[in-house]
Length: 184
Image (tube, rainbow, N blue to C red; front, side, top):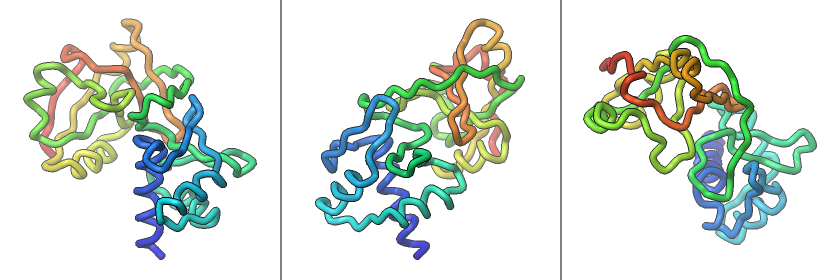
């Protein structure tokens, strides 16, 4: 069952964050998809999704990547979108003094040149703690944790948001706001 949950989670990330069109799914501007339509489109693509499996993925995701609507009829990814179909309106939020970005050491040269940029995503993702950032960095290679002067950015008028799952979001982080890059 664990393998089925992992595969379903990866599939949901793919279609709800990056390529809903791969299965002919339409997301609204806030990233919501109708669960029945998602199940139907997945079946046409040869994948078996049930409401129970989707609910289990949402409930057991340690990163809280997905949200079901209160009535259970709609699902969306909390953040991390690269599809232009989605432009979630997150509430602005004052960040703590420092936030952290986990990445792989191979990206340091680029980061030292241009700061943190969202790449194909809509926002740069930041963590409230070093451990979470370190775990993110491990997924991409030899981990590096970058400390970001978040409060200083905020005081200079840069807007921060926080997704439902706790991930901090910002359009970009200029080099001047990077405290240090630490191999971990």
